[in-house]
Length: 91
Image 1 (cartoon, rainbow, N blue to C red):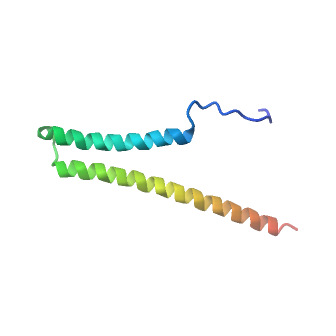
Image 2: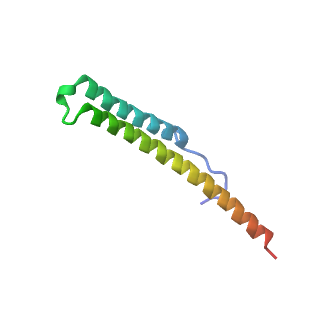
Image 3: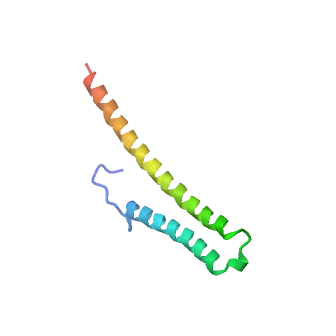
């Protein structure tokens, strides 16, 4: 491995891919509800169950995203705190 600068060879940045994944999740939930609306005679469960499941899926996705962001900020704060404590107590 070289010590020189590393190039980013990604065609699409990771943040942009995550945005596409979030949009895809919303589209899948919307398509499920739309399909249940347009073809109610093919449903095995009541429409309200399908719509509630799609909504619950989106809520879980949003909560997971928020939890990851909060944990990332908390971990970053802990790293800064511990590194500053270590620097302060080095003899």
